Length: 136
Length: 439
Image (tube, rainbow over all chains, first blue to last red; front, top):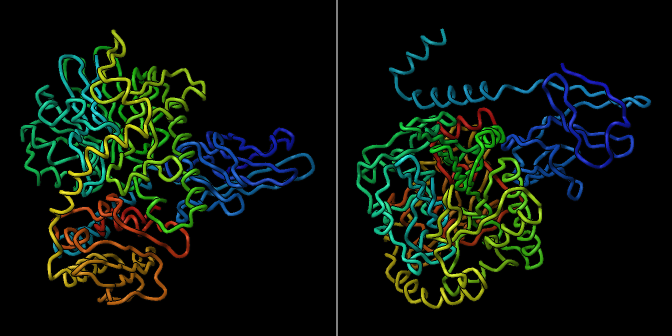
């Protein structure tokens, strides 16, 4: 599980801030000693949320304006979409972040195509037997 | 390398001795007579025939919406013209074009350049969303043209576009659908939703220009003009989301981007060497309200006669409607029906009208029942003659009904149901299942 520890003071107040560690990026929003953080990638089209802005307490993506609730990560525009949360711990003057690695987009696409293929062909006995062989 | 603009997403790109025509919507009154161009094309001497006379070597068609793929416009082009489209997860778009008689359709993998020879190459990029939509990048004679159409590309693809060094980019800058105007919000709430949506659309436009760094940025695809006198209010900045291109130009200037914003009207041209040439009168861009009022007064009698000629709904509308929704809802997996989870009230007005509820929460096999359920979550009010073509199979894409802006909509709770719209967009169970397997 990736994690990074940085000085709390290095995080600006009330503005989305990008933190990068080993090619992985998170977006952090700080209010005093309180922190929330998510993967720095909009689930809609992959824009950097750290290039966005805070609007009425929501994190707004710069690409197409989707807004996310800072408490839950849930999209206010399309509630089916939710940001991947990052665990934040403040200890003294240090802030520590821990998160799960993102699923590779190519793997996601492969899963989608596989699902569609199974569904498309599942009504045909010939294809069903092919799938049975493939999965065995 | 040069480009002639023909309104909305239509551009004729000439480079290396070839011509690529994108999304030729060259008529007026798309979506049941509702959608007109920002400037009425016939006033500028544009028709399907006048553009076909320029003999493009290729067509690029981004997606199936009528303001991009218009059967009447496409009738002016030979059936064997090479058509470039994106290879989408489903074959629906290709089948749609084949159904129109086109025989030379080339599907390109998203992001993979196609070398057309003699230093001309095109790359098509597919949408980041579930819709079949795409954008095109053309490279030739050392120049680069990017036409985003109204496709929402992923961040990584836009970075790839930027890396090409775009000379001129055409960008979506306006809303192009029914939200929030067709909903039953109180006036104050409607005004606030319109204001927020317009602000997001313009900031997204500016940010995509910022990211892709073109030398010249043209606000293009997106808005329609509604010229029916009863629908003129939709063009109002306070009540609708169809943005004046001048606002987009002003937004680029206000952001102080290096890109030169350029307001093109149909027939205006841009040349990589000679620059911009205005072929349209300045007067059409000066006062948007006055322009729309004049255009509406000219078009109103045509709109009226077109409406009067709309065929009435068939006497068997009720049976067809029930069968249509039972078939498509029943084809979904229980998991997809659960995710949609809606009870859609259909209030159909007219001689063949009636009231039904399409219940995605029903165990089946009957998903449609007569009457409106008290706990409906989404309500559609529509004329019988408008829904009839869809449930009868004469029109393929149910989403077009919403795009006609001739519906009234409500939702409870006040929340966007993405899976329901995905179903309206294309109820293909394999596509929906594939999408929600990973989203």
